[in-house]
Image 1 (tube, rainbow, N blue to C red):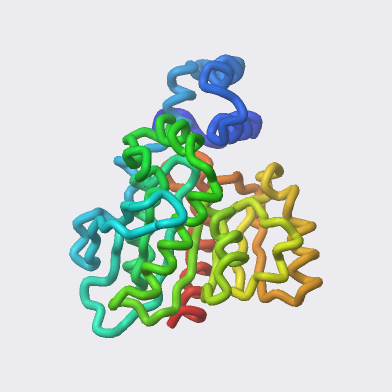
Image 2 (image 1 turned 30 degrees about the horizontal axis):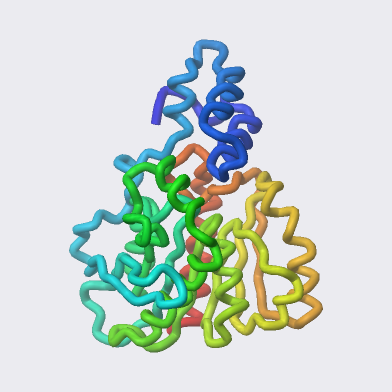
Amino acid sequence: MSEINKEDIKQEVFDLYDDYAHDRIDRREFTQKLSTYAVGGITLASLMSFLMPDYKGAIQIKADDPRIKSEYINYSSPKGGGTIKALLSMPADASKKLGGIVVVHENRGLNPHIEDVARRAALAGFVSLAPDALTPLGGYPGTDDEGRTMQSKRNRDEMLEDFIAAYDHLKGHSATNGKVGVVGFCFGGWISNMMAVRIPTLAASVPFYGGQPPVEDVPKIKAPLMLHYAELDTRVNEGWPAYEAALKEHGKQYTAYMYPNANHGFHNDTTPRYDKAAAELAWKRTIDFFKDKLV
Protein backbone atom coordinates (compact mmCIF):
# COMPACT_ATOMS: atom_id res chain seq x y z
CA MET A 1 0.00 0.00 0.00
CA SER A 2 2.86 2.37 0.88
CA GLU A 3 6.09 2.51 2.82
CA ILE A 4 4.18 3.11 6.07
CA ASN A 5 4.17 0.27 8.60
CA LYS A 6 0.81 -0.50 10.20
CA GLU A 7 2.49 -0.92 13.58
CA ASP A 8 3.65 2.71 13.47
CA ILE A 9 0.12 4.07 13.11
CA LYS A 10 -1.80 5.11 16.21
CA GLN A 11 -5.23 3.61 16.89
CA GLU A 12 -6.70 7.11 16.69
CA VAL A 13 -5.92 7.15 12.97
CA PHE A 14 -7.97 3.99 12.39
CA ASP A 15 -10.78 5.43 14.51
CA LEU A 16 -10.66 8.60 12.43
CA TYR A 17 -10.87 6.59 9.21
CA ASP A 18 -13.85 4.70 10.67
CA ASP A 19 -15.62 8.02 11.30
CA TYR A 20 -14.92 9.07 7.72
CA ALA A 21 -15.94 5.72 6.21
CA HIS A 22 -19.27 5.90 8.03
CA ASP A 23 -20.05 9.51 7.12
CA ARG A 24 -19.72 10.90 10.63
CA ILE A 25 -17.20 13.41 9.28
CA ASP A 26 -16.73 14.70 5.73
CA ARG A 27 -13.56 14.48 3.65
CA ARG A 28 -12.44 17.97 4.55
CA GLU A 29 -12.66 17.34 8.29
CA PHE A 30 -11.07 13.91 7.85
CA THR A 31 -8.11 15.41 5.98
CA GLN A 32 -7.74 18.21 8.48
CA LYS A 33 -7.71 15.89 11.50
CA LEU A 34 -5.53 13.33 9.74
CA SER A 35 -2.88 15.96 9.08
CA THR A 36 -2.07 16.09 12.79
CA TYR A 37 -0.72 12.54 12.51
CA ALA A 38 1.51 13.33 9.53
CA VAL A 39 4.70 13.54 11.56
CA GLY A 40 8.12 11.94 11.69
CA GLY A 41 8.61 11.76 7.95
CA ILE A 42 5.05 10.59 7.23
CA THR A 43 3.33 12.96 4.81
CA LEU A 44 -0.41 13.55 4.69
CA ALA A 45 -0.48 12.22 1.12
CA SER A 46 1.25 8.98 2.09
CA LEU A 47 -1.03 8.57 5.09
CA MET A 48 -4.10 9.06 2.91
CA SER A 49 -2.78 6.56 0.38
CA PHE A 50 -2.05 4.06 3.16
CA LEU A 51 -5.62 4.20 4.50
CA MET A 52 -7.45 3.94 1.17
CA PRO A 53 -8.42 0.52 -0.25
CA ASP A 54 -6.09 -1.26 -2.67
CA TYR A 55 -8.39 -3.26 -4.94
CA LYS A 56 -5.84 -4.14 -7.60
CA GLY A 57 -3.30 -5.71 -5.28
CA ALA A 58 -5.57 -7.58 -2.87
CA ILE A 59 -7.97 -9.62 -4.99
CA GLN A 60 -7.71 -13.29 -3.99
CA ILE A 61 -9.98 -14.92 -6.60
CA LYS A 62 -9.84 -13.32 -10.05
CA ALA A 63 -13.01 -12.77 -12.03
CA ASP A 64 -11.87 -15.24 -14.71
CA ASP A 65 -10.78 -17.99 -12.29
CA PRO A 66 -11.54 -21.26 -14.16
CA ARG A 67 -12.63 -22.99 -10.95
CA ILE A 68 -15.83 -20.96 -10.81
CA LYS A 69 -18.57 -19.64 -13.07
CA SER A 70 -19.36 -16.01 -12.40
CA GLU A 71 -21.71 -13.63 -14.19
CA TYR A 72 -23.78 -10.52 -13.60
CA ILE A 73 -27.51 -11.02 -13.51
CA ASN A 74 -30.58 -8.90 -12.79
CA TYR A 75 -33.37 -9.88 -10.43
CA SER A 76 -36.62 -8.27 -9.36
CA SER A 77 -37.02 -6.37 -6.09
CA PRO A 78 -40.58 -5.01 -6.26
CA LYS A 79 -40.60 -3.68 -2.67
CA GLY A 80 -37.13 -2.19 -2.99
CA GLY A 81 -35.25 -0.71 -5.91
CA GLY A 82 -37.03 -2.48 -8.75
CA THR A 83 -34.45 -4.32 -10.85
CA ILE A 84 -31.18 -5.07 -9.04
CA LYS A 85 -27.86 -6.08 -10.59
CA ALA A 86 -25.92 -8.81 -8.80
CA LEU A 87 -22.89 -11.05 -9.24
CA LEU A 88 -23.90 -14.73 -9.35
CA SER A 89 -21.06 -17.21 -8.77
CA MET A 90 -20.83 -20.98 -8.35
CA PRO A 91 -18.28 -23.79 -8.69
CA ALA A 92 -17.52 -24.61 -12.32
CA ASP A 93 -17.72 -28.34 -11.69
CA ALA A 94 -20.90 -28.45 -9.59
CA SER A 95 -22.59 -31.84 -10.06
CA LYS A 96 -25.42 -31.37 -7.57
CA LYS A 97 -27.59 -28.64 -6.14
CA LEU A 98 -25.74 -26.46 -3.64
CA GLY A 99 -26.51 -24.20 -0.71
CA GLY A 100 -26.88 -20.52 -1.50
CA ILE A 101 -25.28 -17.49 0.15
CA VAL A 102 -26.36 -13.88 -0.23
CA VAL A 103 -23.23 -11.73 0.15
CA VAL A 104 -24.01 -8.22 1.37
CA HIS A 105 -21.66 -5.30 0.76
CA GLU A 106 -20.60 -2.50 3.08
CA ASN A 107 -21.97 1.05 2.88
CA ARG A 108 -20.48 1.76 -0.55
CA GLY A 109 -22.06 -0.62 -3.05
CA LEU A 110 -20.76 -3.74 -4.76
CA ASN A 111 -17.07 -2.94 -4.95
CA PRO A 112 -14.28 -5.27 -6.18
CA HIS A 113 -13.58 -6.55 -2.67
CA ILE A 114 -17.12 -7.81 -2.06
CA GLU A 115 -17.18 -9.38 -5.52
CA ASP A 116 -13.99 -11.18 -4.49
CA VAL A 117 -15.62 -12.38 -1.26
CA ALA A 118 -18.58 -13.69 -3.29
CA ARG A 119 -16.20 -15.65 -5.52
CA ARG A 120 -14.49 -17.05 -2.41
CA ALA A 121 -17.88 -18.33 -1.24
CA ALA A 122 -18.40 -20.00 -4.61
CA LEU A 123 -14.97 -21.59 -4.48
CA ALA A 124 -15.89 -22.99 -1.06
CA GLY A 125 -18.77 -24.90 -2.68
CA PHE A 126 -21.78 -22.60 -2.65
CA VAL A 127 -23.88 -20.57 -5.06
CA SER A 128 -23.33 -16.94 -4.07
CA LEU A 129 -25.31 -13.88 -5.03
CA ALA A 130 -23.81 -10.45 -4.34
CA PRO A 131 -26.31 -7.67 -5.09
CA ASP A 132 -25.46 -4.03 -5.71
CA ALA A 133 -27.88 -1.86 -3.73
CA LEU A 134 -26.68 1.12 -5.78
CA THR A 135 -28.27 -0.29 -8.95
CA PRO A 136 -31.23 2.17 -8.88
CA LEU A 137 -28.71 5.03 -8.83
CA GLY A 138 -26.55 3.62 -11.61
CA GLY A 139 -24.53 1.03 -9.70
CA TYR A 140 -21.20 1.10 -7.88
CA PRO A 141 -19.45 4.16 -9.36
CA GLY A 142 -15.86 2.93 -9.23
CA THR A 143 -14.67 4.58 -6.02
CA ASP A 144 -15.71 4.01 -2.43
CA ASP A 145 -16.01 7.74 -1.70
CA GLU A 146 -18.58 8.14 -4.47
CA GLY A 147 -20.19 4.86 -3.49
CA ARG A 148 -20.74 6.01 0.10
CA THR A 149 -22.27 9.25 -1.12
CA MET A 150 -24.61 7.37 -3.44
CA GLN A 151 -25.64 4.80 -0.86
CA SER A 152 -26.51 7.54 1.65
CA LYS A 153 -29.18 8.67 -0.82
CA ARG A 154 -31.05 5.36 -0.61
CA ASN A 155 -33.43 4.39 2.17
CA ARG A 156 -31.87 1.54 4.12
CA ASP A 157 -35.19 -0.24 4.63
CA GLU A 158 -35.71 -0.28 0.86
CA MET A 159 -32.20 -1.68 0.49
CA LEU A 160 -33.12 -4.37 3.02
CA GLU A 161 -35.99 -5.32 0.70
CA ASP A 162 -33.47 -5.67 -2.14
CA PHE A 163 -31.50 -8.26 -0.18
CA ILE A 164 -34.63 -10.09 0.95
CA ALA A 165 -35.55 -10.30 -2.73
CA ALA A 166 -32.04 -11.66 -3.41
CA TYR A 167 -32.74 -14.42 -0.89
CA ASP A 168 -35.98 -15.26 -2.71
CA HIS A 169 -34.20 -15.32 -6.06
CA LEU A 170 -31.44 -17.57 -4.80
CA LYS A 171 -33.81 -19.90 -2.96
CA GLY A 172 -35.69 -20.53 -6.19
CA HIS A 173 -32.61 -20.82 -8.41
CA SER A 174 -32.19 -24.13 -10.22
CA ALA A 175 -28.60 -24.47 -8.98
CA THR A 176 -29.46 -24.29 -5.28
CA ASN A 177 -30.89 -26.85 -2.88
CA GLY A 178 -33.27 -24.30 -1.39
CA LYS A 179 -31.15 -23.67 1.70
CA VAL A 180 -29.95 -20.08 1.67
CA GLY A 181 -27.90 -18.13 4.18
CA VAL A 182 -26.46 -14.63 4.30
CA VAL A 183 -23.12 -13.08 5.16
CA GLY A 184 -22.62 -9.34 5.35
CA PHE A 185 -20.05 -6.78 6.42
CA CYS A 186 -20.62 -3.49 8.27
CA PHE A 187 -23.88 -2.22 6.68
CA GLY A 188 -24.15 -5.75 5.35
CA GLY A 189 -23.84 -7.04 8.90
CA TRP A 190 -26.92 -5.03 9.84
CA ILE A 191 -28.70 -6.38 6.77
CA SER A 192 -27.74 -9.94 7.82
CA ASN A 193 -29.20 -9.40 11.27
CA MET A 194 -32.38 -7.90 9.83
CA MET A 195 -32.79 -10.70 7.28
CA ALA A 196 -32.73 -13.11 10.23
CA VAL A 197 -35.57 -11.07 11.73
CA ARG A 198 -37.56 -10.80 8.50
CA ILE A 199 -37.12 -14.24 6.88
CA PRO A 200 -38.42 -17.20 8.92
CA THR A 201 -36.90 -19.71 6.48
CA LEU A 202 -33.41 -18.19 6.39
CA ALA A 203 -31.03 -21.12 6.93
CA ALA A 204 -28.11 -19.21 8.49
CA SER A 205 -26.93 -15.65 9.10
CA VAL A 206 -23.36 -14.41 9.57
CA PRO A 207 -23.05 -10.70 10.38
CA PHE A 208 -19.52 -9.28 10.45
CA TYR A 209 -19.37 -6.26 12.79
CA GLY A 210 -22.96 -5.39 11.99
CA GLY A 211 -25.46 -3.18 13.73
CA GLN A 212 -27.96 -5.06 15.83
CA PRO A 213 -31.73 -5.31 15.28
CA PRO A 214 -34.15 -3.84 17.83
CA VAL A 215 -34.29 -6.19 20.83
CA GLU A 216 -38.07 -6.42 20.50
CA ASP A 217 -37.55 -8.08 17.11
CA VAL A 218 -35.29 -10.84 18.44
CA PRO A 219 -38.21 -13.26 19.09
CA LYS A 220 -38.84 -13.33 15.32
CA ILE A 221 -35.38 -14.78 14.58
CA LYS A 222 -35.45 -18.43 13.49
CA ALA A 223 -32.08 -18.74 11.74
CA PRO A 224 -28.93 -19.82 13.57
CA LEU A 225 -26.49 -16.93 13.89
CA MET A 226 -22.73 -16.64 13.82
CA LEU A 227 -21.65 -13.15 14.81
CA HIS A 228 -18.15 -11.71 14.34
CA TYR A 229 -17.07 -8.62 16.29
CA ALA A 230 -13.83 -6.65 16.52
CA GLU A 231 -12.54 -5.75 19.97
CA LEU A 232 -11.54 -2.21 18.97
CA ASP A 233 -14.88 -1.52 17.24
CA THR A 234 -16.45 0.29 20.17
CA ARG A 235 -19.15 1.92 18.03
CA VAL A 236 -20.77 -1.35 16.89
CA ASN A 237 -19.94 -3.26 20.06
CA GLU A 238 -22.04 -0.90 22.19
CA GLY A 239 -25.17 -2.66 20.96
CA TRP A 240 -23.95 -6.22 21.54
CA PRO A 241 -24.69 -6.73 25.29
CA ALA A 242 -28.39 -5.94 24.90
CA TYR A 243 -28.62 -8.04 21.73
CA GLU A 244 -26.93 -11.00 23.37
CA ALA A 245 -29.16 -10.73 26.42
CA ALA A 246 -32.23 -10.85 24.17
CA LEU A 247 -30.85 -13.82 22.20
CA LYS A 248 -30.30 -15.69 25.46
CA GLU A 249 -33.65 -14.70 26.89
CA HIS A 250 -35.50 -16.06 23.88
CA GLY A 251 -33.40 -19.18 23.47
CA LYS A 252 -31.96 -18.32 20.06
CA GLN A 253 -29.19 -20.35 18.46
CA TYR A 254 -26.10 -18.20 18.15
CA THR A 255 -22.33 -18.23 18.40
CA ALA A 256 -20.42 -14.97 18.84
CA TYR A 257 -16.73 -14.28 18.45
CA MET A 258 -14.81 -11.23 19.61
CA TYR A 259 -11.47 -10.84 17.80
CA PRO A 260 -8.78 -9.31 20.08
CA ASN A 261 -7.07 -6.10 18.97
CA ALA A 262 -9.01 -6.12 15.69
CA ASN A 263 -10.61 -3.07 14.10
CA HIS A 264 -13.95 -2.69 12.41
CA GLY A 265 -13.43 -3.91 8.87
CA PHE A 266 -10.77 -6.44 9.87
CA HIS A 267 -11.94 -8.91 7.21
CA ASN A 268 -11.43 -6.46 4.36
CA ASP A 269 -7.97 -7.25 3.02
CA THR A 270 -7.81 -4.15 0.83
CA THR A 271 -7.27 -1.70 3.72
CA PRO A 272 -4.77 -1.52 6.61
CA ARG A 273 -7.54 -2.32 9.09
CA TYR A 274 -7.18 -5.87 7.79
CA ASP A 275 -6.13 -8.41 10.40
CA LYS A 276 -4.91 -11.48 8.52
CA ALA A 277 -5.12 -13.95 11.41
CA ALA A 278 -8.56 -12.77 12.54
CA ALA A 279 -9.91 -12.58 8.97
CA GLU A 280 -8.77 -16.06 8.02
CA LEU A 281 -10.12 -17.57 11.25
CA ALA A 282 -13.45 -15.77 10.91
CA TRP A 283 -13.81 -16.86 7.28
CA LYS A 284 -12.98 -20.49 8.10
CA ARG A 285 -15.56 -20.43 10.88
CA THR A 286 -18.08 -18.89 8.50
CA ILE A 287 -17.57 -21.47 5.77
CA ASP A 288 -17.69 -24.36 8.27
CA PHE A 289 -20.93 -22.91 9.65
CA PHE A 290 -22.46 -22.67 6.20
CA LYS A 291 -21.34 -26.22 5.36
CA ASP A 292 -23.19 -27.36 8.47
CA LYS A 293 -26.35 -25.37 7.85
CA LEU A 294 -26.72 -25.21 4.05
CA VAL A 295 -25.66 -28.63 2.80
